[in-house]
Image (cartoon, rainbow, N blue to C red; front, top):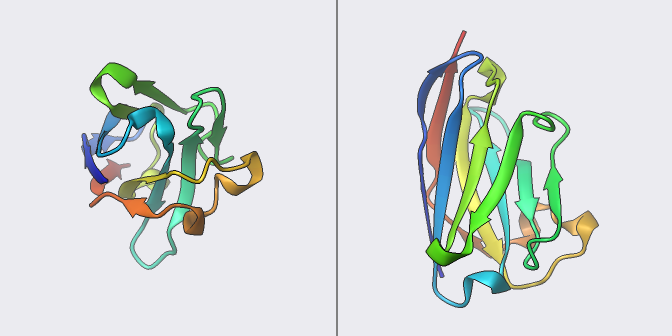
Length: 126
């Protein structure tokens, strides 16, 4: 399985970015997919996830109402639409996947995912 994240960049506070993550390998619909981020000097933290059935989305409290995760099954791609960006959203964003068919409470745990992309930098200026 390979995950290729893209779409990061530099944006002013209040602006928007859309991250993409293309997933190759086994059937796209088999994966739970998540987004995590890591800021300099901080631990990796959960951002959002979508279940393999695409019926459940989970968001971290810090991004709820501002970020939206969606999928394009025809393109094997997951998107993270990020609106109303804040300087504290600055981080390297990683997409990740698992075949484990996670229960809801496990979707925010980094250890639940076995496949990770290379990350894309998001910088939000004040």
